[in-house]
Amino acid sequence: ERIGDAAVVQLYADGFVNLPLREKTLIYHLYQAAIAGRDIFIDQRYEHSLAMRDVLEEVLTHSADIEPEVRTEIEHYTKLFWINNGPYNTLSSRKFVLGVNSDDFGIAVMNAAKHGAVFPLEEDEDLATMLARMEPLFFDPNFDRIITNKTPRAGGDILLDSANNLYDGVSMSDLQTFDERYPLNSRLVNDNGTLVEQVYKVGGMYGEQITEIVGHLEAAIPFASQPMGEALRALILWYTTGDDANRRAYDIAWVADTASPVDTINGFIEVYMDARGIKGSWEGLVFYVNEEKTEDIRRLAIEAQYFEDRMPWDDAYKKADVTGITANAIDVVVETGDSG
Image (cartoon, rainbow, N blue to C red; front, side, top):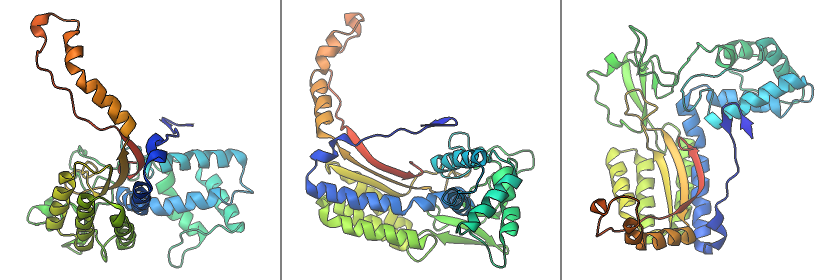
C-alpha cells in the first residue's frame, strides 16, 4: 500500500517454518520483548505522540457518523503516524500535519465520543478544551516543527529547538558543568534550575514497559544457547540497574556470541535523534540465520578465486590468493522502535 512518500509491503521470514521448536519458542519470547518496548521510542520521539495516537485510533474505531472525506484524511494521517512512530517524517525529521481543518476534526472527535470513544483528557478537561490544547500538535507545521535540529537559527539552541523528548527545558549552556552518570539511557530534565537524570530502567522512567521487556527476556533464556543466555542475563541486569558498567558487560557478552542461530537487539542503542549524539533511542529487533540462504553464500565464497580469475580486467590486476567472505544470511522477524 502506498501512503504519501512511503510504501508498506508484507515480507515473510521464509525459513521460520524449518526451525526447531526450541528456536521458534525463543523467537516468540524475543518477539514479545521487542513489541513490549515500542511505545518507549514513540514517547522518546515526541512527548505528545502517545496521546495523539490515542485520539486518532479512537476516532477511527468509532467513525460511524464521520463524513467519508474527513475519515479518509484522518486514516491517511494515522497511517503516516504509525509508519513514522509519530508526527515527524523519519527521513527529514520534519513535522507533517493533518489534512482536514480543525473544525471538521473536532466534529469527528465529538461524533466518535457519542459512539463510545474515550479520549485522553487531562484533569478538569472536556473535549472542547482537549481539542484546543492539541490543535497545534495536529495542524501547525511550525509548532515543534523538527524532531532533531542540529542547525538552529541564529541565537537558537540545538536542544531547545529540537522537538524530541530526550530533554525537558535543558539548553547546551546548562550542560557545561554537569556530569551525566547515565548519558545513554536517561532523559535529562531541568527541574527549577536543577538538572535531573530520569533513568530508563525497572522502577524508573518507562519502568512499566521495561519490566514487561525483562519478563519476556527471562522467559527466553531457557530456550537460548549458553552464550546467548549469558548476554540476555547481562541485558536484564542493565535494564534493572541502568548502570553503564552493566551496559558495557552486555555489549561484550553480545559481541562474544558469534555462533547462536537466533539473535536480538533490544535496548537504547543509536544516538542520531539526540542533537548532541549522546542519548540512545530504544529499539528492538529479532532475527535468525537462514541456513539455506547462508549455504548459497558459502558455495559462492568457495569459488572466490574462480570469479577473480574471470574478471574483465587485465591479469596484472587480478589477485592470486583470493579468500571468500564469511557471512550469514538472516531473516528478520520483527523491527520495532528506532529500527522499525
